[in-house]
Image (cartoon, rainbow, N blue to C red; front, side, top):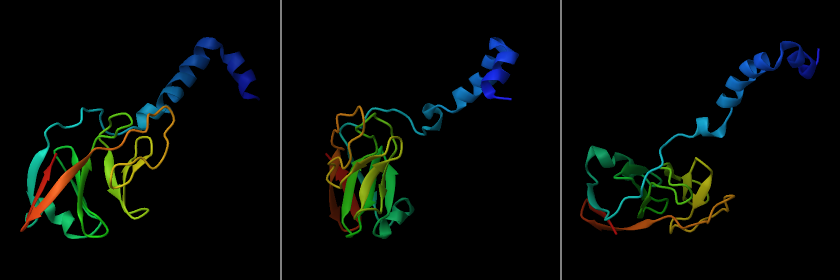
Length: 147
C-alpha cells in the first residue's frame, strides 16, 4: 500500500499524531549543541603553561577553552587566541582544528576562520563577520591573553 493511501485510511488526526513526533525530532535545532551567548568583554587573563590546565598547550595544534576564549598553540608553535563565540550566530562552539594549516571552526553551521579571524567560507544568511582575535604575550611560562 502506498504511503498516501495508508495515511488517508488512518484519517488526518492519526496521520498527524504519527508524523508530528518524527518531524519535530528531525529538525536541525535538535542537533545544535552549545548555547547562544554574548562574547566576552575586557578579556585579560593569564595561564601558567606548567599547570595541568594548560597541558594541551604543550603540543602544536593543542588548545584549551578558558573564559569563552579558545587558546591555541598553533601548528607552528605560536600562541593564538580567539573568541569561542562564533560571529555568525553567537554560538559558543568555536574550536581549533588541524585542517588547512590550522583554522578556527564552529560546528553549528560550519563557519571557518583563519588564525587572524578572517572568514574562510560564506555561510548563507550571514554577514561573514570576522572572528574576534585576542593578543597574546609570553613571559617565562606565563601566557597572557588580552584585548
